[in-house]
Image (cartoon, rainbow, N blue to C red):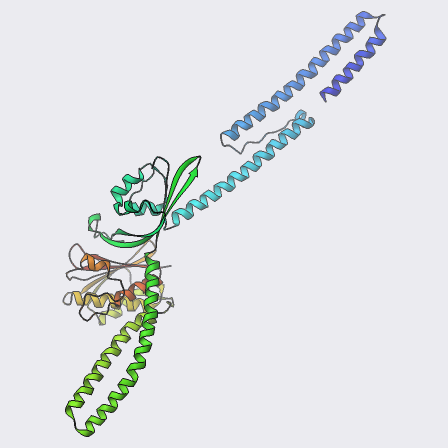
Amino acid sequence: MLIIKVIIINLLFIMSFLLLLPHYPWLFWLNTLGAILLIATQIQRESYRQNKTLIALFDGLQNLQDGDFSFSLTEDLQQKSNAQQHQLIARFNQVTEKLREEKQSLYQRELLLDKVVNASDVVTVLINHRNTIIFSNRAAQHFFDSNVLLGQLWLELLEQKMPDLLEHQDKSNAIIQLMIKEAMEHTNHISDPSDAIKIEQSWHLSNHQLKLHGSSHQLILLKPITKELHQQELQTWKKIIKVINHELNNSIAPISSMCHSGQILADRLDEPQLNRVFKTIVGRIKKLSEFIQSYSELARLSIPRKQPFNIVNTIKQLENLYQLDLISTQTDIIVNADEGQIEQLLINVLKNSKEFSPIKATQVSIEIIENTLVILIRDYGCGMPVEVMEKAFLPYYSTKVDGSGIGLSICREVIDAHQGKITLNNHPEGGLQVTINLPLS
């Protein structure tokens, strides 16, 4: 537009030169001065418009540099009339709109990633090239029992909180065993961390080296796999039990039939000694059948059929079988679970409590904490050694002379199938306390 205006002014100047000179020189010089002023005015206006546009672009770029993508340029009538300036401003607004959308999308992805990482049970720690922790999730804070991990030196943290992990620092992908403190949850009986027991747990350690902003970083991931290994071990035992059960039943049935026939024959022949032999064999077969039957209970445990029921009424019904002292602030607590399996779990625990403390009644308290049903079952016996407590839930492990090692294994499988948790702790005032956490929803 400015060039067209200058060309028109130049044409007018040439026409005045041809028409006014040499007869009217003063008029020519007056016309020339007017043309020069007009050109200067047009150039000044155009320069002002360009400077205004450049200043607006500079301010916009400064906002973008500061991370403010909500900024956009506005146009006046003169800028709209200039095609180049209009196109430049429109393109700048398109870029800022694109950057604003990308920033919003990136923020949403970062928010989602942050929630996923913090909701995961995988311990996640990011360490920079100075061996300093620059990121950790909630699982890591719980693992190291510290709310502030950022800025701490990784090796110093391991020496203070988890020395067992130091020997695995050179491993990049391995399954390791760590001794983890298992404190009693949802109760105020144990306030000293030293009262918590250490339980051996299995973890999958993954160590990754990566580059961030040109610097070397280390990403450490610790995934708990104890539950998965227990489930796999339990499934293996179930398969073995089914095979053994099948083979033994196939052998016991004909032996039992032959013994019965032998007893009849011994009675006819009036042979007391032979009769005693057959009775002894029949007695041992009966004991063996009962032994197989107890082990088959673990293999037959099915997927829970969850239905709402009142857990308080279920526990009150067990008062007829076991001497217990029920403590509950509510008379109706509805849980969505398999009542038969939960009742079997409670029976196994109460049975053990009665054996440890046959004289004094077992204390059973029920409360709801954060949408979780917490059942505390405490006996008044001599408690349980720590080394026994670490293996208490292993299948077929028992310290009793006539124990099968099945009861607590069934309890753990039942509670795992209901997405709950069961823990053992020695009460500071004596006796063993079993804590059962069962989600209400």
